[in-house]
Length: 159
Image 1: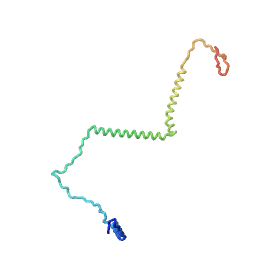
Image 2 (image 1 turned 180 degrees about the horizontal axis):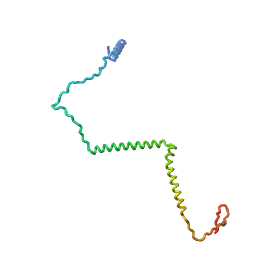
Image 3 (image 1 turned 30 degrees about the horizontal axis):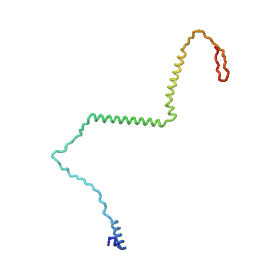
Image 4 (image 1 turned 180 degrees about the vertical axis):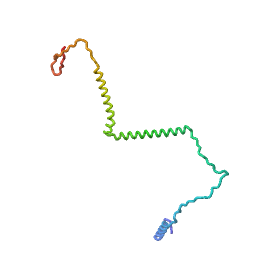
């Protein structure tokens, strides 16, 4: 069998080579290895001459750091509350109906009516107590003399 491009394969060599490649490609292979696990139960060798000692967690946090942490939690909770309240108000405003506006406006309209009634009563009470005192002779004249004639003329009271 030649692999030189100057000498191409014959028909029988080419079919034999194709059959060999196909057999090699479809040859059964050994199954993939299955992963296993192993636990070693043998005692751990002792290192050094002292047994292990418990080491409790005794970290010291500065007071300012604890205060900052608590303050940030409080600020976060407050901002969350403000955000929820704003969201609720905006949800309510986005679903405004005529009935809702009237229900909110009725107390204000009632207060305005009461204030107007009180103002009118106070105004009438002040006007009723006013007494005008005239001194001198009162002359009443009822004659009207019209000297101007025409469509845009004015009437003048006589003296």
